[in-house]
Image 1 (spheres, rainbow, N blue to C red):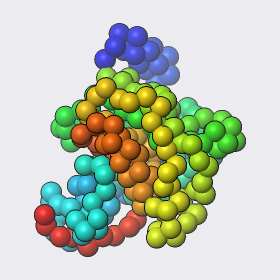
Image 2 (cartoon, one colour):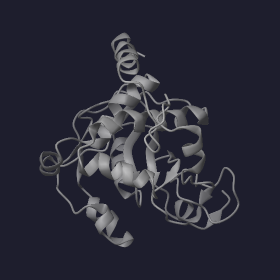
Image 3 (spheres, one colour):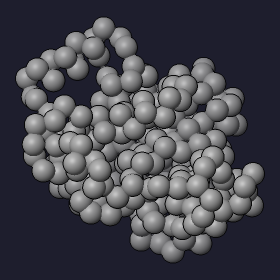
Length: 242
C-alpha cells in the first residue's frame, strides 16, 4: 500500500472509529459478527458470474456461463440484493450517504481477503454517464475504489473507462434487454499497461455492464479480469460442472 494511502487509512480509523452499518455497534470491519452471520449470503455462487446456482455447490460455472461465457473470468459477490444490505446500499447511492463508502468497502475488502485470491494490478470503477453523475453528485463505484485501495493496496484508474452514452438503468429493464442497453456505451480513456484488472461496482444485476467493460478491456490487452461487487441480484441459474 502506498504510504499516503496507509496514512489516510490510519487517520480515518483513529478519528472515526468504525461502527456496524446494520446495528450501529462498534466494529472495525463495518459489519459485526452477528449481523454478518445474518446477512443474505450467496451460498453456492457460480465462480464466473457470481449468481446463485441451484444445486451442486463447489467450484463450478452455471449453465448460462458455460453456454454464453461473459468476458470476465470470475466474480466476488458475497451478498444477495436483499434487506438489510440492499436498503443500506440504496441510501448510499440515492440519498448521498457517501460516508457509507468506507464501511461498505471494508466489508467487501474482508470478503476479498478471505478468498485468498491473487490481487489484480489495477481496479476500474464502473463509470457513470456525465448526466447521471451530475444528478447523483458522485460515482458510488469510484468511492468504493478509493477505500478499497486503502484496504487492499491496489491502485485504481479513476478515468480508466468512460461511459459515452446515457442509458436506461439496468434495473428498470427486463433481463433480455440489458445487453442491448449497454452495448457500445463504454470507451477506454487510456489503454491500460497492466494484464490483470478488477471491475468494481456496488451491485451486479445481469452482469451485462461488467461483460461489456471486460470485453473492451480484453481488446486492449488485459488478460485476467475479475468483478468485485457487494450485492448480486437473485438470479438462480442451473448448475453444470465444467
